[in-house]
Structure formats: C-alpha cells, structure tokens
Length: 186
Image 1 (cartoon, rainbow, N blue to C red):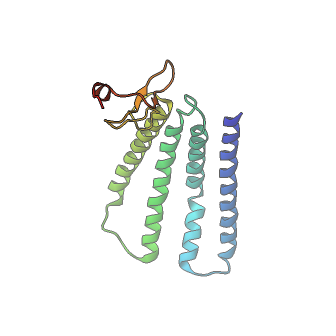
Image 2: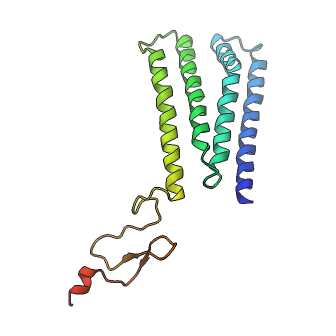
Image 3: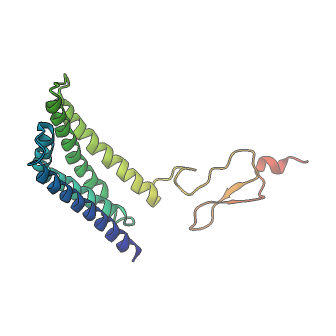
C-alpha cells in the first residue's frame, strides 16, 4: 500500500504543479494585451509555442518518477522514461537559449546544432547509466564494499570485525578481536 500511496503523491504533486504553470501561462497571455514590451510578448509566445514539448517532457519525467518510487524490479522503466524526458528538456533549454539570443540581439559563435546532438546523446546515456546503476546498487545486485551496500567497512587494527550471517548483510560484532590482535599478548 505504501508504494501506491507514494506513486499517487508523486502524480498528484506533478499534476498540481503543471496546472499552476498553465494557469500562470494563461495569466501571462491575458497580460500581453496590456504589456506591450517586445521581450515579454516574445517569451509568452515562446512558451505558447513550446507548450507541447513542455507537456511531453513533464509527462515522461512524471512517469519516470512514478516508476522510480516503486521497489525493484518495478522501477526498471524509470531511467528510460527519465532519459527520454531529459532529451526533450534539453531541447527546450536549447530553444530557450536561442530565444534569449534573439531578445538580446546577440549571436553566439557556438555551433548549437553540433552541440545539441552531442548533448542529446550525452544526456540520454548518462541518465540511463546512472539510473540503472542507482537501481542495481539499491537492489543489492552490485556490491561495493562499505559504500551503499550495507556492508560496513572496518578500519584495520580495530577490534571490530564484520560478521556475515546466513541471508543477512554483514554486521559488525563488537569485542571480536582480529587475528592480528588475538596473537598479541598484552
């Protein structure tokens, strides 16, 4: 029941946020008849024209986050939705950069088309790799001793030694001497 409640909380929170954005955009559209600044009208027109891409990346990231709150293996689609949503978000950001350049009458010497394609691939690959690594580490499929694995790392020369019990992660048993310490007499 806890997972379903978490998914509902994520979905409702994102939907409420998106509805607030749309209401603010409607208000901004209404204000364009009263505010005649070219930059303001350009930004509102940009948001109106980009609304479809905003909806797409919002939905994809919402689905990714909803899968992300579930337990393994139900969270496996999460990085895929996040990666595809990330591509649309990066496209929106590049379009926003172009808008800012046009408002400020500045042309950058960057070749955005080449950089866009590289950014799309990098964002997709990084989100996929980091997302699945995070899922597998959390699920215990990849064990990194002492880091994110539940196995404490014990500094050498201490009297604490990790003890592995059947079916349980290693725990530190206090007062157990290491072989090195047991051989020494006080």
